[in-house]
Length: 234
Image (cartoon, rainbow, N blue to C red; front, side, top):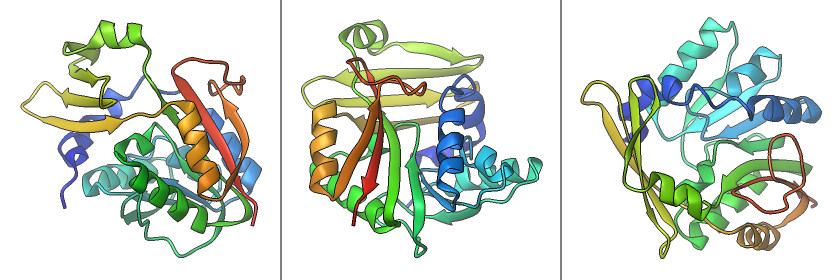
């Protein structure tokens, strides 16, 4: 099945060019683990390539072949190698057991039901050795962010626009992205409150090691973003 990201694979890197704050955080987690690392939703390798260039083996899973093609080119330019596999969050095609699974840049928001979230979290747990960790980030929007962006085309990066349509009743974000040409893609994301993520993690066999409010490892005290570090205890 084609992914909406296939249509914007070639403009994804310039679209996300300003998103750099999480790279060092995930690289530090990879170093701490010693590798190998599984990245779910690897995309174009924004996180995976720096980890691989650091000498740590990375298995990258994504549902978009177009994004994986870009990732392969990006890795080659960096003189690194990433083991790329087509697959999804629910049933990643990974048989290895690793000390670290990461799911950066809010990729778990592509899951729309608690049933799918539980399945994805259990699948991630199954990839971990005992004591291994799942690290991911998600968000829940603030009212002022919704008000400032709702149903408006905004130029996020030069020549690349996005439109966010928020539905606070269903807690979904319909996000459209387009470039200078006719290239356009739309995806629907669904958010949860932090307490709901905590409950799902505990229900699926994780112990919460940390919940940060940002990639500087400051504790979560409220706000839009949460960065979770969860450990498989058995």
